[in-house]
Length: 255
Image 1 (cartoon, rainbow, N blue to C red):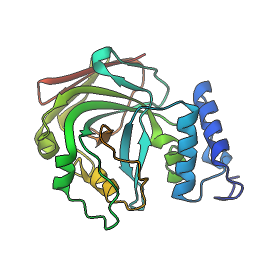
Image 2: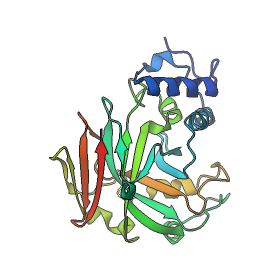
Image 3: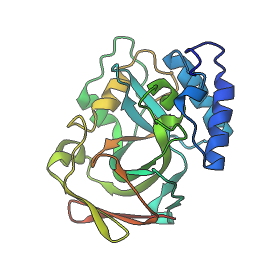
Image 4: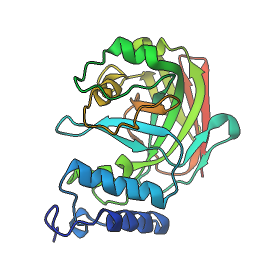
């Protein structure tokens, strides 16, 4: 039976439980967790989990909660494809091709939430093709409790940063061809499609979140912006090849 949200909630204990489940390759149903009651509860647990996993790279994903609250989670393990990238496969693992951006300057919290899309673009120093791997130690993932899923880094199980792209990709991605093969089989072949149409939607929303940490969105931070192909389940290990626009390639191995 699910323990009521907030009743005896211990963010450190939840982080330790997630870390143990991930290391053992096991899953547990939502009903077996004490649920975070608030966004802050979930982020406290996420921060303890990041400490448990010794995550130190300034690389993040941005997303949106079901009630419209912008959220983030660290990317781990994090690789750069130029150095070779191998991520361990696990049952139920999913794949997403994404655009990532690096900030060339700070985006400090504005208490009037007045950042414009143009200001976000001006703050971006580089854009990249990237690949995110997703899995969860929660049997239902985020279907029953998004806050629990947020505490688990919104399902992130790895990220591979690929080659640079023109900054203009943030405006043209919807008309760009995307092809993905896994183990030699085509798993996506169509135009890139972000869930919100605009890859900067969630980053702009987070920049304008007046309650985000003051240390967030600093110069040098890498932010991945959301899937361009949906979340595709990988039913087995195997190499992945991503081709964006016909001439930008990213390869990684799921082993």
